[in-house]
Image 1 (cartoon, helix red, strand yellow):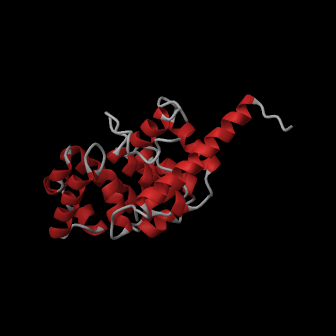
Image 2: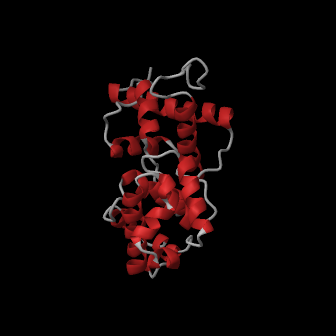
Image 3: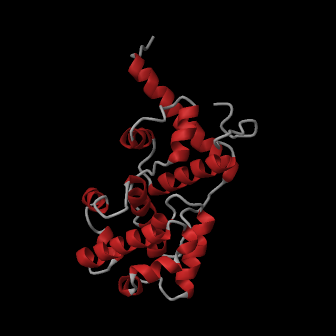
Length: 224
């Protein structure tokens, strides 16, 4: 009989849950085609604006940017922070987010001539470290930019991911961002599509079922 150490048993259990959860959620929700955005720039803007707000408010803010002709690097670089804050007001915390958006645009212009394609040609580890030095960009936002706008293999860890895995006993909610990221990296194929889809599936599950007051009865993951 093959014997496993307790660590190996834990690893096998985690692997089984991660894989089964993906299959169950994809069967339930289908391909979610995340992240919403018509261009890499729009995805980056969305990643910055969505901090601490619902996506519907981000859509309104991006709609305002489009309507004002500001959805370009050049336009965002030249608009004042004050005027930008008024345009993105629906996103909430608009002064702070205008400052963050301007900080990213300044970073892009200074380091890559305002060219997103050039930015994404940077070594992905180096680029992530640089993004984390930009005002207002934390790990979740950086990884959203890298995965969804740049097609880089960084799994995005958010509050929904922590809550779902914590409630299922896969990992403690207070575990570090890096520990969560390592869990998915260890047990998933190294494919951008899967990273993209899995995060979207967890967000959808969190919004529909794994709320602060959970609705477990109809959750696709209730049996695992």
